[in-house]
Image 1: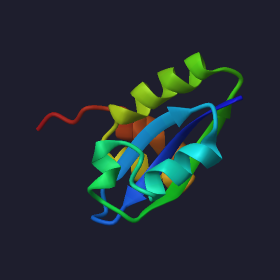
Image 2: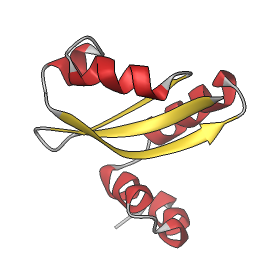
Image 3: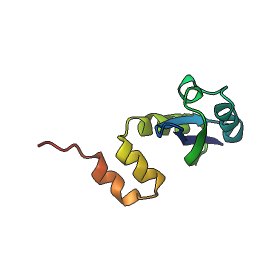
Length: 93
């Protein structure tokens, strides 16, 4: 199994990652041994995750979610899946 996950950092920013061992990776982030980004924004908390059959799928999802706007990420966290398509559309004024 593999996971794509999202953390909320102490400054309110969102960090997206993927891993084969979610529990261990969360421990690394929370103790400052994770990514430089989260190390500078402790404490962090898990706000969302998805499980995949393999790490390749989890990594692809990580890259997809990393490219999303904050508003779209928040909709994902809140489980507002019906809003995701509308939030993906570019708005031209």
